[in-house]
Structure formats: structure tokens, C-alpha cells
Length: 159
Image (cartoon, rainbow, N blue to C red; front, side, top):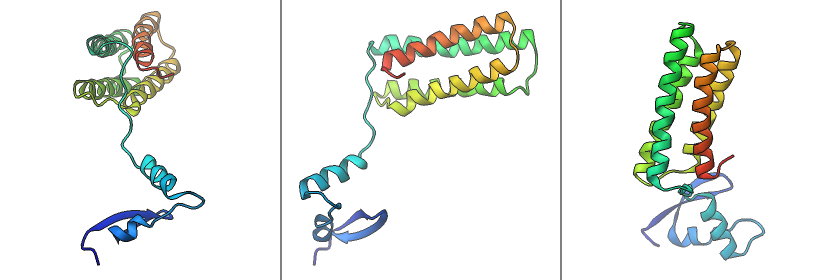
């Protein structure tokens, strides 16, 4: 009996098995090669995304997202100071997501979830801004931020 153990998932149940037992695990209705490939593809780490522009350009866009978010916050403070407003928290979320994306960009580990997270937070911010009947200045600041979020989506080929 082999002393080496392997972790396998069978029917959604995590189990420990010897290497010999793990090698015999088959997925229903599949050849052994297809079973191994299917099993591996479901549990691999996400694919790293590469932007259509160079890293320096995407970093500039991310920096603009941060500065545009700060500008939006200042504009909202000046036009209608409501620090308990949900939009202020969502601006923080956009900045946090852009920081996370920038960190992963520096380590060349950007995955689709990083980009999706930033865009999702931007969409939530847009909804919050629309609910508060924004002034023209807030709308202009949001449009600038939205343009840069669209640039991030375009650079990574995400809709």
C-alpha cells in the first residue's frame, strides 16, 4: 500500500485516497484522459488576464480612476454634504477595488474577477448616484470616472 495520499473530489465529496486509488477516479461517461482533463480544468487557478495596452498605460488608467473617485467625493461634499450617504461608501469601494487591481497588475496576476469587481462596484456607485438626484457637477465628475472605468473594461476586453 502506498504511503502517499492524494485528495480527490468524488460526487462533490472531498476524500483522501492513496495515489493508486486517486488515479482510478473517473467522471461519469468520460474516457480516462477526458476525466483527468475535465477534473483538472474545473479546479485550476483562474487565467491571468493581459491588457490590450501596456502595463504602464493600464496603470495610468487605474491612477485616473483613483483620482476621479476622489474628485467625485469632493464634488459630492461641496454640493450636498451627506457623509452617511451610501455613495460615499461606494466611492471607497471603487478606490479599494482599483488598489487591488493595481496591486495585481504590479505582480502580473490580474484575473477577470479583479476587473469584474472594479466594474461591479462602479455600477453600484452609478445606481447610488442616480438615486440621489445628482447636480450637474456630480454628474460631470461621475461621467469622468465612468469613462475611465470603461477604459479599464476595454483594455481587458471585458464588457
